[in-house]
Length: 220
Image (cartoon, rainbow, N blue to C red):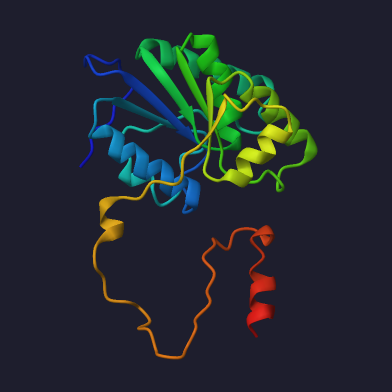
């Protein structure tokens, strides 16, 4: 069981880190958020967690996570009010590092962290950006310029940001982390067969952009 800061203030001498994600539904970014939260809680950090919508199968694994719901578009009055609450929360717990994990968390946390005077603010671009509308990409690009660093999980994602004008010194590539359990020996679900090549696809079936249809047609 990991112990996460419940938001009532940090009494530890460990540096206070705050991490935010959109939701806690099953997905690559969400799983990475959980993996990093658990790992950092075992290190020299006082880890605080936040999300925009507290739903999904990972909620129960992260006790103490705080919800800051925008209830609609991210630039309406209620959303701005939530940013003020978030900034107050960051100041109260003495946050020294704030790290957002996805598009919606970027737009919520980064301005709030700057308003709160957090010394180190880290954004994320964990996709190519081709699924964002031009307006969304431009809005995120403006927000990311407020960061000290931007973490990408691939060189392709980094190249897209640099092409949009973000400097090389601001963007860094850090591949996805894996828990120790990922390296444990397991019995294959489908044992290998000599002379047989298996091709598969791993992607959450939550959006047509994942293109399961193309894979199934090619494999048929």
